[in-house]
Length: 297
Image (cartoon, rainbow, N blue to C red):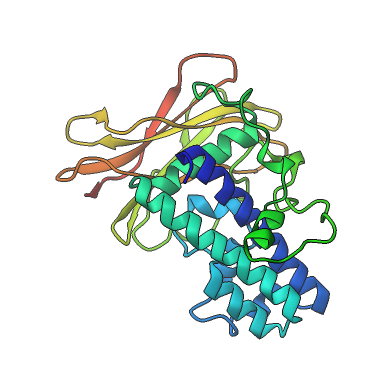
């Protein structure tokens, strides 16, 4: 079965490879991603976009692209039988890993997303496994999938994990989000947190899950570490562990750096907010805390 870390790494790799497999199928036919919206049951532009984001979708709450999704994609695109089998086998692997991780603990997606963020920043502090385990990129997951399905992979497909560019590996997300807040989302106003840095803390409850996020804007060239945690508004104290994103780098004017969404599980029966802070890399203390409006849990 494997440890949580091993299962999470395998799922991260599978989601990245699934994203590349879907992109390759679209590229081979010269079709845009919106082509899939009406060809996959209950799909939307947002959902398809998240499937194509690979492992980054773990920070959201969308359904993962399992065997049924891959089968519908293959059918909608009328893919050759061999290519269709590969996609469906990869989707089945995602389904299996998801089921195993769901059995491990509640909030497994937030923990896996945090692990992905730490891997992208090169930080494995406290886990003591960097020297013991080879990089998940060193073995193509598709080879294992095809072997399990009784197929033979003739040649290694170089670059199967290009779904996440190493040149932008420091952040979970850096896309500006100027759209109106999602239904149920509560965000603080953009607040001056010192040294020209603006922070925004957001919280939302969706389908019985609490999600929190920290966003930063600041002067071009500034680097920062971000932290986000759930905060008991009545007792005025943090009630979940800190979730961190390291070495966020503002490269252009008006750029927004995002840390989250992350799922958290505070105790029931109170009102909670998201508490967001920041620090300069290399310093030990987070400061400039901003608190979102509260939601009932």
